[in-house]
Amino acid sequence: MISIFNTLSRFAIPVFILFILGYGFYKKVPVYEAFIEGAKEGFTTVIRILPYLVAMLVAIGVFRSSGAMELLFRSLSPVTNLLGIPADLLPLAFMRPLSGSASIGILAEMLKVHGADSFIGRTASTMMGSTETTFYTASIYLGSVGLRDTRYVLIAGLVSDFVGFLSSIIICTLVFGR
Image 1 (tube, rainbow, N blue to C red):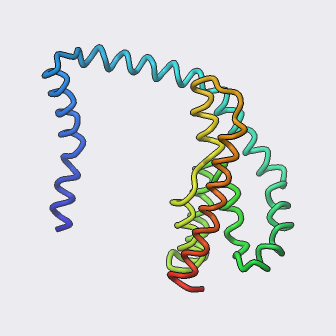
Image 2 (cartoon, helix red, strand yellow; image 1 turned 90 degrees about the horizontal axis):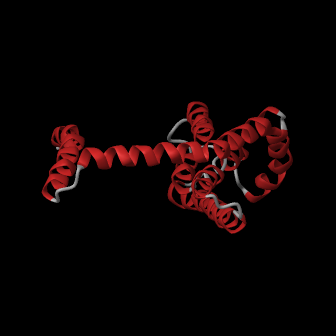
Image 3 (cartoon, rainbow, N blue to C red; image 1 turned 30 degrees about the vertical axis):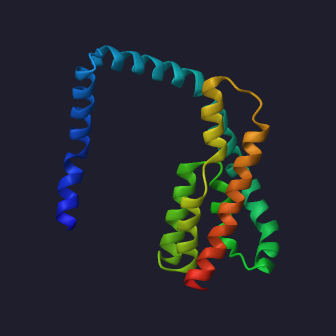
């Protein structure tokens, strides 16, 4: 069964590309010209969102390098321990809304230290799938269309990240125990 899926997955992208080309030919769409036009729009979008992306990456770097992140974790650790939330999950919970690559690095370190089958490893993995890089996503999408008022988008995104964080802990506790 696995060999069938491996064979199918090898041909999925080429078949998809041929399907798009064939469908465009069938509908009499100038496929190459449409592709070039889309590439131009993509380049314009990249230029438009670049300042937002740079600002977000600089802010994350300053937050981590200044030691503010470590100070925040140390100050919240007693409260989370009282609630039964492992303090080792805090760096991931705070970094996930900010940066996908930094949160993947934190997850990799957690899995190396605690193991993939540990409670922390399973909960951290579940958190990665239950949350989003809210600030990054908002800055990219809202910056690409020129929206400046991000108040409600960020509140909704951060609330959903918080719910994903808590749900990950609750569900992993119920399913896997401690």
